[in-house]
Image (cartoon, rainbow, N blue to C red; front, side, top):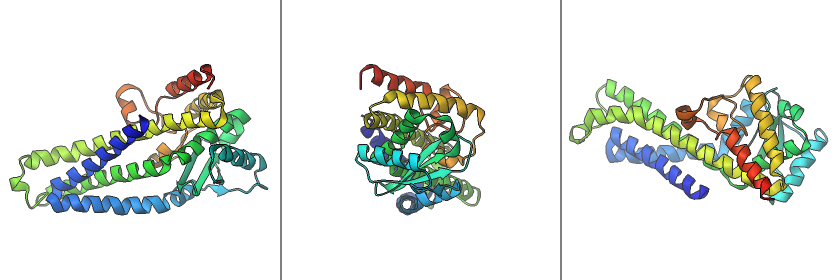
Length: 285
């Protein structure tokens, strides 16, 4: 169900991109939008891991430098049926973790100094298994592509805004039934819709990674307890992240509200994630 939902949402993002390109350039604009998205996805696929690791000054560690962490990652990777990822430590007190890499053969798991200080062994295993779940489920690639397409939509809307200010949005705008009103709505509504779809994809993948972590460790409560600890810590330790990468972390480093604001959250409510993991434990997962 989660896979079908993500496939639908990814298709919806592509449709929004093509429609927006069509508004401001007709058929050629839609084609150019697809090409633009393809180029951006290519660079995202090959270089996003290097960029995000450099952004957070993550340092790769060897088994000699971090023997307990390294052996934990290796054991859990074996249990997950994955190649050994590279292991990084991020020099920040913010307790969090993320995974990156274009595929399981070129993947990395990064944990912060803060998370190593506050979690016990079982909790840290749950967190690392969650990140390995993202790697096994190819979530990193999916999230990167979704973020890239959403970014392209926002960029096209920004370009359309300036196009309208300086002489029109399309050579065929006189024949468009929506005309200027439709273009104005597209500029305002489509970037918001694209962001909401991107966030929905991210939230769906978090639930799936939690379930995968429970399968890997056979201990859903380890991750549930870790999430509870991390949520409390996130309220106290200031976020030191780029909002564009917030979807990568195991808990949302940017605090958000409930109801309507939750539509723009990169993560589902932590309480709901914990409840699902505890239900797995009660079912003797």
